[in-house]
Length: 56
Image (cartoon, rainbow, N blue to C red; front, side, top):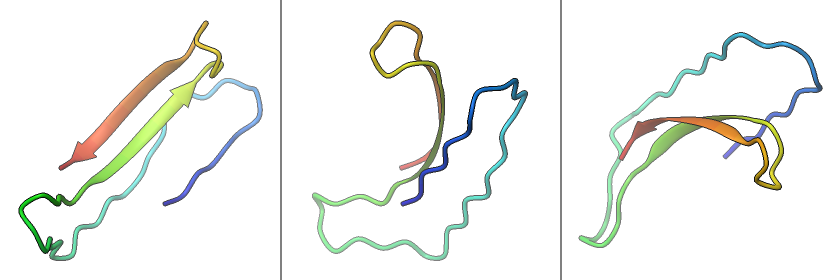
C-alpha cells in the first residue's frame, strides 16, 4: 500500500508498474487484487475525478 500526493499544477499523465509474482489465496472466500488509482479534485464530492486500473 502506498499513497503519493502532489501540489496544485497541471499534470498530463501518470505511470505505474504493477508486478505479479505468483499470487495465491488460501480459501474460496479470498481474492488477490492489484490496482492503481489516479484522483483529481476535492474529496467533498463537488469535483472529484478518478481513474482506476488493475486486476482481481
